[in-house]
Length: 300
Image (cartoon, rainbow, N blue to C red):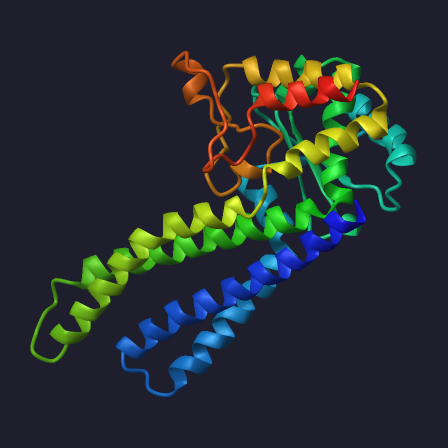
């Protein structure tokens, strides 16, 4: 476990560095094309470092806002609060994660935050309504495993940074095409360069986003599943929960490609509705639920 924590911290640093470099290059070329002079590189560095800092320290708030989550209360979510309190002893966590709820019929959950001291566990109302006590305990234990292993830092930083890069590319490309018709002898060359950069951004951003999310190894889901069993001593609870989550046909309204990797199972149900059997691929953000259940049964 300690080795995985160390690797996650190193990978987080590497990803932040890559993010700073990429944003610096994008902003620098934009500024340089707009002929802002030697101030371009200074502005690009300040912009990229500020973006990285904001993504790191406010990633949990950004993710919660994107998913329209609200704080859980003891009055409305007593079962959830009691399960978390009980698992605090077996998990070994010293700081209690904050609990949030998303009003959605799909049963799902995720954990976020930059470290265990600033961690959040978020569940949907569908999860609270459709799972029994031991199934819900297995899901919460899984998310607490991500917190203890520092998976939350890596997944949260990646989700926010990937979303930011895609957003930056989209804004830049829209501005480019809207302003592209204003062509004259003085700015035609600049517009041509902007067009090329905008096209490159449009092509590379989705690829870059996928590659960054693949940095979140699918093995981490297996590790979180097995660690959750150490917390609960009840593999059947998590197995039953995964089966219910996989078979539920509801779409998660707040789901998007940037944060899909954070949930306990993939929130997109397109293949399930089409009657297709979900399998893992090198582009999957999650291992198949069937493989996860089989691994849990082998632990028994």
